[in-house]
Image (cartoon, rainbow, N blue to C red; front, side, top):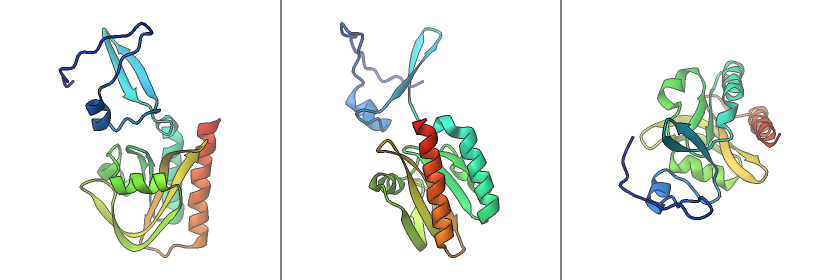
Amino acid sequence: MKLAGIVRRIDELGRIVIPKEIRKTLHIKNGENLEIFIDGETIVLKKYSELGNLKELSDTITETLYKALKSNILITDTDKFISVSANLKNKYLKEEISENILKYINDRKVIILKNQTINLTKENKETGNIIISPIISNGDALGSVIVITDKNITENTINTINIISSILAKHIES
């Protein structure tokens, strides 16, 4: 555990302010949810990921689509890759997404890149035909479903990925 060297007073309502530097470092935005855990005498705050709670479903989706489409499938929240198909799993699972991917998620529209290279993380990039479908639930952009393939992108593939994004959004809403 890193020491930040910062001390904060709890106000009369039991609130504390998380310093701006820490929020910026951890990409915590106003209005985002945090999980609170107790570990012995330590209070732990963790950024809450609604998609992270659908890990089992996400893993099933990525592996099923990987077999059906013969393409790489990745599912993200707004911070990390939460599910990755077989051959990219070791490279990307639990890694932070790039600013490019976050921008595409926040643009809230399906992105199709043909024969292009994209930074998936700060250090790693992939080349191919790429579909990025944002996961939108209750008006919030929560993540994305990404397909990377060397095959031609068909309307059927685009529709399939959009359906998967919608299914994940519906699971979050319910």
